[in-house]
Length: 72
Figure 1 (cartoon, rainbow, N blue to C red):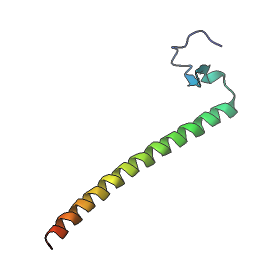
Figure 2: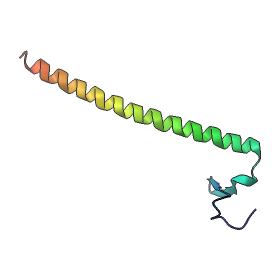
Figure 3: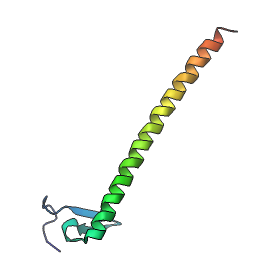
Figure 4: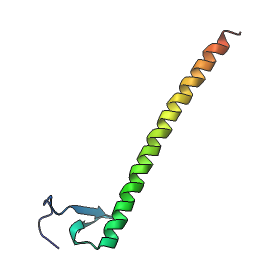
């Protein structure tokens, strides 16, 4: 393994407490890393979507509450 961990041309993967130079990994492992990155990105996107839906739902509940107050 190369000595210079701070070399931007050879990024480092830290996984379960161990460091691996990405350029020294097999293509199969690199594909697994890409798949994991895609999955993480999708999870973040859906988490953000859920937050927005929750905020919208709360707003609609508040609107309904106000409209129903007028009926009392």
